[in-house]
Length: 189
Ligand code: 5GP
Image (cartoon, rainbow, N blue to C red; front, side, top):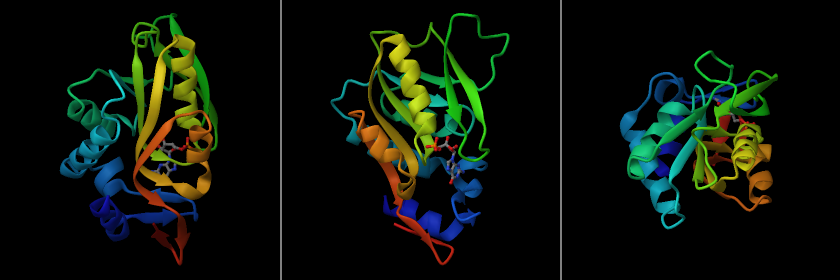
């Protein structure tokens, strides 16, 4: 989406040559109109795929996934928790996820009440890098017997391999902007 690419060029900050910081419009302050425009494109892209539930991961995926869930017809939005809290019972699905930004491996959990075999799920996140977060969510859906049609993200870093891994699983992948490389400290689309 052109407007997202322009916003990344204007406000994105590259850290350590492989992380894009977009706190001013996606990860700290959120540009709601931009999120809605992206959500409209995602709705069109997955139109006809029978999606009835959105699944994301806390924390940074939630706000964007909310926009998508609303745009797709007020679908239920489920987010995987990164720590097992007292409000989640023992009946949970768990997967291990390597964090791209922290370089640690941690469990994520989803209550088995909220993903069912009858569900057709779209995984939504803010970023796609190596695909580890999406694979953790896919693992949980498979444990639940739910169908996953694809993965939709605001920003993909195409040089980190996530799309290839997900498409090899038969999933459709949508990104609002695909950063092909960082060159001279600027994103190239
Ligand atoms: P993956 O699991 O696909 O390797 O990385 C995606 C996850 O890591 C997303 O949930 C996102 O929060 C985080 N992430 C990966 N790369 C970036 C990045 O360049 N910038 C930001 N802000 N988050 C990222």
